[in-house]
Image (cartoon, rainbow, N blue to C red):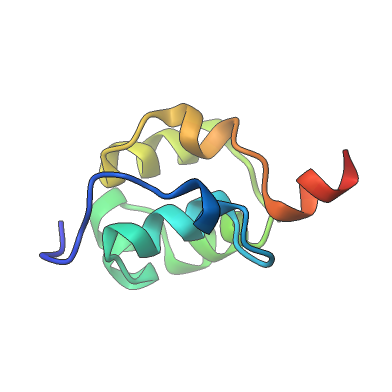
Length: 87
């Protein structure tokens, strides 16, 4: 885990327009997409697709959650800003 990583993911960051839950958590933890790719074993393109809402494979989200040391529900259940505006 990068030295700049923090434990908590501020909810206001996740609610920021244009941020997916994954991107918010990843950046809060101090990971680049490339570092997360190496840590969880997914490709940079797979992570980018998840962050852009093009992929929501639960098994991939589990691997990422383990790598970021967060509960799966943070990535699976947390709505993105776009989803919140639709409700």
